[in-house]
Image 1: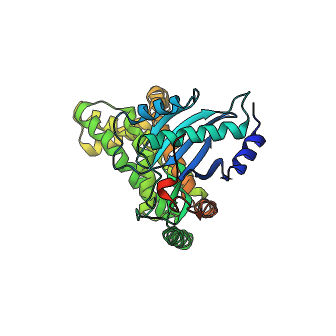
Image 2 (image 1 turned 90 degrees about the horizontal axis):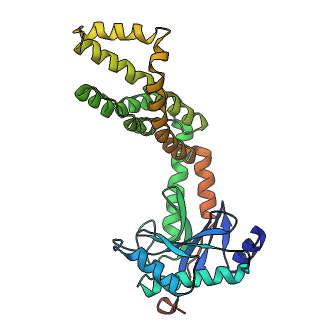
Image 3 (image 1 turned 180 degrees about the horizontal axis):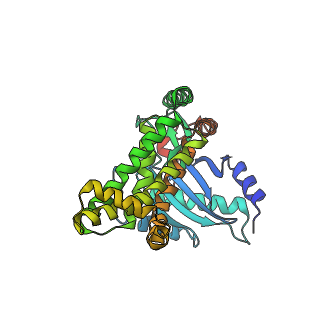
Length: 335
């Protein structure tokens, strides 16, 4: 099996750079991102542009790659900005030869199906971008053509927002926003409870996401404590909904006035046996709420002041001139 050093050396010899687990470079006119899945498995993302992904395109690309003899490579996912292929560098493979063959086969498959290299800026959509750079695509990064001026302007704006948040951001206001967002996230569950007397644990995935949005809307300071604030406030919803369930029960079934129902429900909440009686439902709620917490945690960890600057600096470090349009028509020919 080719070692990590051999693969890194091969990619470097092919003109690829690396940062944070990504390898990036230009291949036959395409901006390419390589993501390593294991010691021998990779994803190769080629930058393209599509108004709409045609049905059957992935199968067509997979068939075209197979025609090139790439038995362990395939077309994995096609979006409007990237076409992803998988391949492996196995025991008997020489890293440089194998990587070259895989990239050539993927590029040829794209060309054969009429997918030329991306020719517009990934940020502004303007034609003929002069540079290549890693840009965010959801939770991943993709090496894409960009306009250097647009990217630098975006960089300045991002730094200004970070500096403003460092000075004017408030954990207190953020906590208020997170609490209100948590209440908003509870509304679908409450409506379902009132209308059907049924609780859907799935809806609790909304709570941390809404809490996170509330934190940001109230200009909460994006520091390390911001993540903890959102998570703790979100967890309060796990107790708040059973409380509201009891309020609904006492007003509907026992015909107590609303104000009295709130008081009786609170007395039940403080009873020593309350947690025992609702442990099963709480665990189910917390399980599905965990989905939302993972989403909120992942997003906010990237939005903290320090992380935002580090990500921006790493992104700018990948900026290179774009060679794809020097001879656009001849940038790749299938082999």
